[in-house]
Image (cartoon, rainbow, N blue to C red):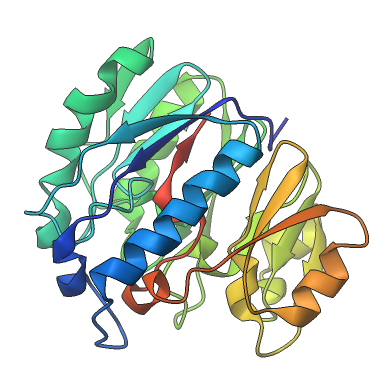
Length: 255
């Protein structure tokens, strides 16, 4: 199932996160990031996951976001290729840190692709083209995934959305939580049940379904009211981490 997980890889926060990439030109405070991150780990453990904790990487400001340089699929891990030069070295570090956890390790060598642009639903992957993921990277990942038995669809992420998953997340095998902008994508409309969030609560779209829980960014009242009718909600505050364009999904690799 899309949301059935036993394990997670999470990296401890680095003090250099204050220099992370930020479309808003904001600089998060390390102490607050540590507090939010600690609560994130607790929520993951409450959802039933065993945590594999990696050491912080001060030389890479955005390295807390482990989902961008790697992708898990069954017993495989695929090392991706982040777009920004400040993140390129992360893949070289993480491949050594996590190789013992998987049966096979594969690599996207050409093009740019980040995990934030990859939505996995069972054996199907939706890859969103964005400022961080180009066509060459998406196509090369698609070749790898298809060899592993998966199916792939490549879509265009709306221009003003950083990553495909910034404003959507899988709630179950047939349902995707989306912002109003993502709700307009023809592929999603044609193939899935969409739960559209109200204007102003787009940030809640980057939620995480883990086993029988949904981790939901704190502060989105309407989203919580909508989802709590059907799902068991754990609120997780990520206001400080959001200053560097991040949310719940990017801080862990789950399988």
